[in-house]
Image: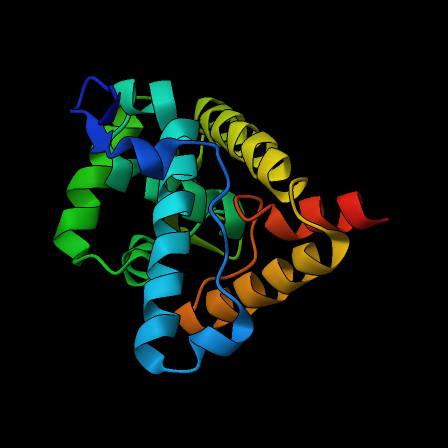
Length: 189
């Protein structure tokens, strides 16, 4: 087991999930059944989860994983009304309100007046919150780049297309946290 510590708990993964050693891939012909496709995607998601966990590293000493998710959404979409942020992250409005209050008190998020409606208050990243998201994103980007360099340019394009399709199907918007596309483009030029 590899344990990734944080003050709010530790994430533990079997060594084979966190190992940077590439796994042999199955040939396309073997992935014809839905079950095999699901198994291959699950394996890839475990590898990506390990990258995500390692990139979060010391950030989990500062914020919880759900709090970090809010910071990422604010980073990619800009200041938002709390109800819209709750919808975007799939949490109940009261849960978001408590989480946002903790983030404001911690200096990660700021309340700002909506320039279009002075009576409306938005939640936006503070400079400290933006820096935390940027640091984690940079670590994740470096590790993803290292992994992608192990693939041929054609395989990199396949990964790019697959991740773009998966993100669309999951309803994820393109953001600064999703640097995979930029890394693949830079490496294949």
